[in-house]
Length: 492
Image (cartoon, rainbow, N blue to C red; front, side, top):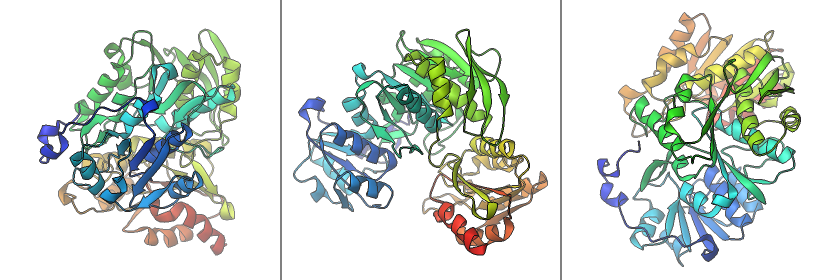
């Protein structure tokens, strides 16, 4: 359940009357506050493709989004100033990083400008009933699953609209208006705006949906596991009786959502009791192969994405693609041709025969699955895992013991201490040295470092030909994914 606005100390600034938003055809000029964020930049691109006049502002104007916006000729004003909203745009989109005292957000509120959160604006202008929204949600795997679903539809000749929280490897895209139904969107459970603490996915009007996984996350937004689980119960309750809900049947917490929806429920996974399942799974260094079984038919599949978790992601995408009329042979061909998402087990180079892989994993379950996937794909290589707990949840002590158990499949672990922010409670923060000690106690060599500049030379000294270096962070990791290959080349 969303945190009540009245429970917040600045509730008086969060509760206000917003003007009604005109229909999309009555809007022309859109301003986005925080336009260089991944989601906001993609939304700006959708508005431009739809023929709107688009502009925005941000205090973090840097590549790659700043470069992308410049290429699209979308003007970006650096810094925040109420003058950016004069003359008033037809619609102001307020990013969820804006507090009530934000200069532009406060001006929009005080002047009574037409304004929406990011998910409201996406739904109002693009997720119409005619577009048949397909929403992919879950604690883990939603970016890859969304990318897979978009790829399967396009590979089969469809032209869907989409918005993904990541960038596809082959095309470099994260959004497209598309000409056909459906519209595929990654459904994030994080809050919408300072004036709307509901999860973003509550705005997305799903015709069909996927829940990939359900584990406690976003401890800065949700009170506890029940609170987090409640958000997904509310989401699946949005589906109509003629909708489809695809649940990962291998996860009991996900299966337990079935009674909370009116839609048709189908499960997918590796277990034999799933409606859609993978059989005869074989893991290789080029990715898994398996037999896809659906509706009494089967098709042999090769998937160029390491790990059993990616087999599950592929099954979810296959189920929704099939519901949109894509045949099993088309699905098998599409899966074989998928090149992945950037920062999801992305190969950054092979300097001196060291395979450098960059991944977004940050929740302990995602870290464990990613490490295991690389171990299964490269059983004869030494696997060195380098991790930065950077998200609001991963920096907290809540998952400290889980992180200590997440690296069992690695041969060596380097842990970068989490960044400290001005409003952190020191007693609630993760102790990197304690995590390292747990990893060592479980039999894996491990070290902790205070900053990336200390990690890099140790990595160069540690890695040797034949190794796999797995970098995991949901941030830039101090440029380590770019710096490590270059440093290894220089050392060689």
